[in-house]
Length: 497
Ligand code: ATP
Ligand code: MG
Image (tube, rainbow, N blue to C red; front, side, top):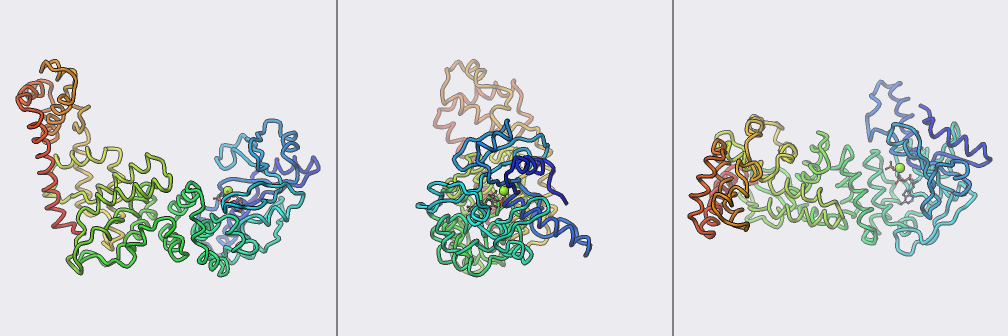
């Protein structure tokens, strides 16, 4: 294993101009870990990727005693557009991790009044001072080709798989409370333990996390959720007292038992579903939905013991999920998708019970683009409840029906008649009535796709035009109610869960 040549070139150029230069931080940690893993895999025959994350550094950072203006002189095409002393170099590398390399002048962070970011930074000539401001010993290593600079026993902690604050943990968390969450994130990503004094300082001061910008919290949470063992991450957050400042809703399910269909508590089932979503490599939205799909069960539980019920936990859960994700400043698209998955996670799919029409309605409700994720959510949900088979024949059957009906019309846009034509045939102007007629037509086509011809729909539109707005609405409402009643009946029988 060698340092990538793009990084080497930068180090060499800086040194040729008389400056010090090192690779520093996360890339050194990951590089040394990967090197150790390669050595181990040679000696014990294990696979390289075993244990923790893949260990390809996410990015390569360089630190130097040159000031930004001096760095820019050495690298004419570089950018310097921040107040933290970071100059960005673009390389020709195809690898995302190496496309941009950041060169940062040794610096000391001065005074944190808001536990978020330093009020200002001061450049220094001293590498040790720069390393001392970094969060954990394993992140405070610098590498110069063959030489490793290690003032805080980072290599020892790396070897023993320990996350330890540099210096006095409580002081360091007081400066920037996000570091407490980062400790958990690294412990989970790398499969390390948090050293006990560091852990105690987190336990005691977890509430400081409330002062932190939600975007920063979100980014660390995404890394935890996307790690290989996110269930351990959530559990560690809980043990560290941090979960209640991030997703208190999850804690409500901790000691709440379910019913005869379940062996786990709500909380256990939630993190187990997340575990299986991760094991199967599902995307962020499915993982979030797996974690949140039963989030409203504590509030909807009625009765105790084997016959307890949780009616409407799916609907309420979708709302809770949106509230949580909005609070954590997730993008609107992510929020909507997770809420859709949670709202529909109770879909029914018994072979005899589910008609093609019902599957078309499911596709319409969920959106064809989300259907695979919904099936994945069900797989994670089932595995997380201790049910042995992930894709039983019923689910495979559903997949088959989905494919079969995938070309059928499921939206007003797909009807062989459009709003203009409806207006022309009925001699009416634009308005809500056009939408009502189109939706009534769609409802029929969802039941019987072969009715989707312009001739039939034109004729049917005229018949429907005999009804008043109120009657049209009632018909639509009745269809919806009837479907929901059937769904609920089946849910009651099979999915009292
Ligand atoms: P990743 O692999 O996720 O990129 P990383 O360790 O590189 O992890 P970054 O957020 O990229 O983490 O930060 C780069 C380095 O900057 C860290 O290794 C650490 O030395 C330092 N650092 C980052 N955030 C903080 C912080 N909040 N407090 C102190 N040092 C930090
Ligand atoms: Mg990094």
